[in-house]
Length: 419
Ligand code: GCU
Image (spheres, protein in one colour):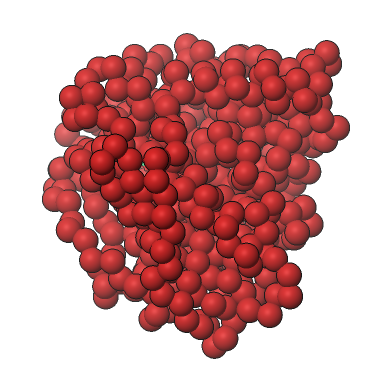
C-alpha cells in the first residue's frame, strides 16, 4: 500500500500503519456482515417506524455521533441575484444565518435556478471543499474572504485548509459541471463545508458545533459527535432553505458528495427523509465501503488523519474493524425506500470499489420489502455500465474523482427516477 500515497515519504511509524492495509484481492479474508434487521415478516412501513431509527441510533453510537437539532433561529437573507451563463440560469446567493445559544454562524449558499423551466425543478445540492467560487468560472459568484488555518503538519497534504483564494475561481469546475447540470433542467446548490465545520483539527471554535458544545465538552473523551455530523447539520439547514424556494420542487432534492463529503451525504440521507436521492461518490471508508471486508483504507488510517470527523470513542475500533458491530450496508438501508446512487473509480482501490458495490447488494433487502429491488444484481459490473434500480451503481474507469462522466450518468439515472 498504497498507490495513492506512494509519493509521500512517511516516517516509519506511519508507514507501518499504511502497510497494515490490504489492496490484494486474494488476501481478503472470509467475512460475515452484521445482519440487516429485515425479513419477510417485516413490512416496509414497519421498517420505517422501528428499524430505521435503530440503525440511525447505532451509527450515532459507534461512528458519526449525534447530529445536533435545528438551531433556535434561522434567517435566510438573499445577498445577490443575477443572470448567469448567458441567460441559462438565475444565480441567487443566500446567507443562511443560524443563531443558537447566544451565538451565530453564517452559511453562504450559492444557487443556480434554470430559466424558462416552466415548472418547479429538481435540485442537486452538495457541499464543496474549496469555496463556492471554486465550482464555476462564473465571475458573479461572491468570493468570501477567509483566514487560512496554518497546516498542522507541513509535510502532509492532508489535515490542510486548501480552500481556493480569489484567483482560484473555477478551480474545481470540472467536478461540478454546473452548466451541463442546468442545461438538463436541474437547479444547483452548494455551501462550502468550512462554513459549517472547518476541516482541520482546530476547526471546532468556528464551527456550528460551538453553538452546542463547550470547548471542554469537545475536547473530552465523552465527545459524542464529530465533524461529519456537523456537515450533515449544515446540509439540513441548506434543506430548510431549499424547501422555501418557489422554483424548486422540494420533493426532488438530491444531495451529493465526493469522498469525505460522500460519507457525509450518506449519513445525511439516512437521517433526513427530505432527501429524495442520496449520491455517494468515491466515499470509501465510513462511507459506502464495507469495513468487514479487509481491503483499502482501514479505521486506523482514517482515524489517524481525521479523528475530528468522528465521536471520540470510535477510536476503540482501531485495528478491530472486523469486530465493528455494524457496517455500511445498514447505513444505506436507512435510506430505503428513497433513491440511492453509489459511484466508484476503478483505480480508487483505497476506497474499495468492490466493497462499495457489495454494501449496496447487502442493503438491497431494505428496498425489496417495499416492493423494489435495490441494486437488483449481485454481479460486480464492468466499468462504464450503470446498473441498478432504486440503488444505482456506477464504476467509472479511473481514479478518485468526480468527473463530467459521473455527472452525465448520474443525471441519466435521475432523469428516469427523480424527474
Ligand atoms: C482521506 C481519507 C478518506 C477520504 C479522503 C477525502 O484520504 O482518509 O477516507 O475519503 O481523505 O475525503 O478526500
